[in-house]
Amino acid sequence: MNDSELEALRARRMAELQSQNGGAGAGVGANSGAGAGAGVGAESAAKSQQEEARSSMLSQALDNNARERLGRIAIVKADRARAIEDMILRMIRMGQIRKKITEDELKEMLEEINGQHHQETKIVYNRKEFEDDDDEEEYDF
Image (cartoon, rainbow, N blue to C red; front, side, top):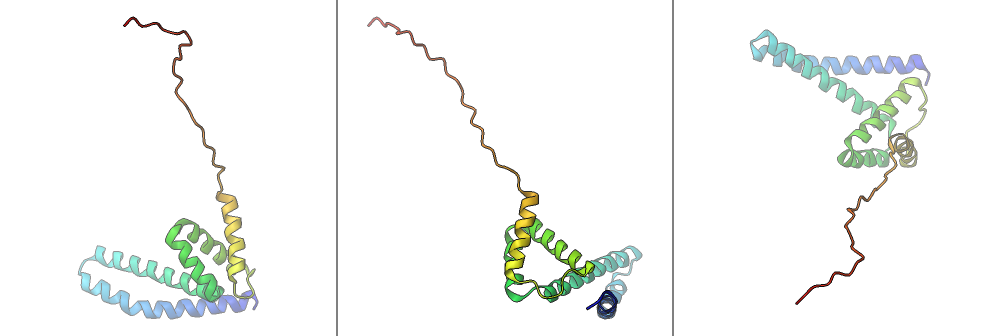
């Protein structure tokens, strides 16, 4: 699939999403009754549309096992999952992905991102020094 075909698919999908959300967005704006409320409704509709397009592209790019693993990662480390999703979407836009990403390929991406975010853990013990008198003290009892 070349870039022009991919762009055509994206444009078609975005038009579909806009037509689906267009009816819902108009209902939100009409019910609010205020100009500011319509802007907020349109903004939230646009955000949900972007998230829908994002999840649609990811579901097309990942096989089932990889999608499940990414979901589990999102539960534990949402920022890492978002970074991986961004990486996958960037690769899709650049035309680097030709087939569905498998779980093993997703693991490799995880290792790459972990390498970028990895901070070496160093534990330092600061012990208080006590004055140890080596002299024997004599006590009178």
